Image (cartoon, rainbow, N blue to C red):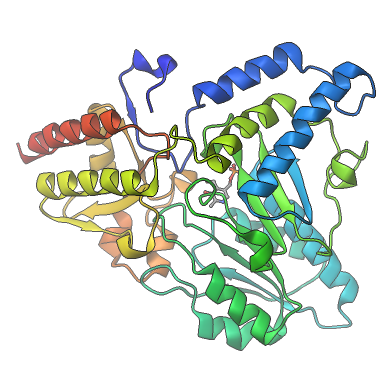
Length: 396
Ligand code: PLP
């Protein structure tokens, strides 16, 4: 995106699924909060109440953006904390309920590593000793619903994601809901909505999701701010206790500058402001990039299931070129992309693509190019001309 602070490097940043730059409006809101809303929202004087007003108006915007008027919406440090809070709550409840054998814990095999790692962590730390089972996915990254239906009777918690961070694949949450609620209404359900916010419509209350996590820095906010939605009546045990902030759900003085930034971005989502491109425009960006990549790299194969994915993520492999070589080529052209998942850059192959049954060479050579809803047509055009030049260099 075009931002003053990035202009001097003339880099084209196409790694939005790893993190995004801060939107100027969000940065301005941070500055304003630091200068003027420095009060503690728990203080009862006017300075505190001003901060509290920002906190509560942002909470309302968030509830509107995810369509969940009831239940709790709390601010966290990011999605990893949200995942921990949700899983800790669910597993504490399951431990208290279990009489002998613990129910199993299911998660989609393409979930971000934070989900299975957190399941293993709290399963061990709480001494639940539940069986943790990965749900297989098909070649489009969709959860195997038959597998889910078969295992649901024994399950205490199911963790799935709304949009995959490596491929952009959109999960069929409605179908998961039907399978879950038809077979066993009580199973707790965590949905990781990190890559979905601002990109696909969310209707979490209607979906009967119990917990859902979000991360501000994936959508133009600074690092260190996130949200967790908790359905009304979903079991909850706070992970962080202390001063009783966030209705006792998450103690610690709130990150008001981060919340101010989130508020600005949530406004853009809920107001359908022209600052964020619409679906059609984003699709046209995707088509431009895809046709440029195809022309520049004739041996390219796309790993993103385009008919079932957000327009903002393009995952591809080029036969004969390990991801490192393509990454270096793009880097030299001042285009920032990542190999597979930026969050696990040490992995040789992508466990997400492996789970989708994609051939090994593609998984090992995968490149992820991702942009956000605030990306401009000029940036995409510039990226395409640089990709054209870079691919010519590769030919030589
Ligand atoms: N879930 C998904 C789908 C993600 O893409 C990420 C970050 O890459 C996370 C969770 C973790 O987010 P954070 O590092 O902001 O806590």
